Amino acid sequence: MFIRAIHTERVVDAPPEAVWAVLTDLPSYGAWNPQVTAATGALEAGASVDLTLSYRGRERSLTARVTDVVPERRLQWVGTVADGWLFEGWHTFELHPLDDGRTRFVNRERVSGLLAPLVVRGDAAAGYEAMNRALAERVERADG
Image (tube, rainbow, N blue to C red):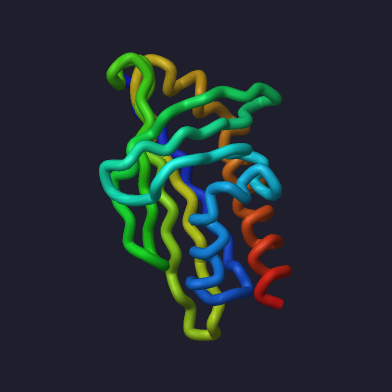
């Protein structure tokens, strides 16, 4: 079984509640998120979310299952293709409050399955970094 991981971080000049408000506003993803360009569903453990992912200039649809929600701290979902043997991705967002009122935003994913080496290649982190940057810009505009 192939396993790959992506881990990115960014400090956002806003408190966790402001970051959480944007991160969990799924209908607004199309307006700011370059990685997940559309998302619908309920953000509660066990619920399904329908995602449209933009990756290397192509859009792909995926239904993920929400596995963990800790308001203003953590959101996680898992998406699979062919019961996970072809692809399984555990996508986790973490918000860590900093002493100065800012937030350390962690955007990471653990990918396994036969497609893992193709999905997570040298430039894969760039999409996560682009999402982090866009999230920070949107939050900081709204909070500032």
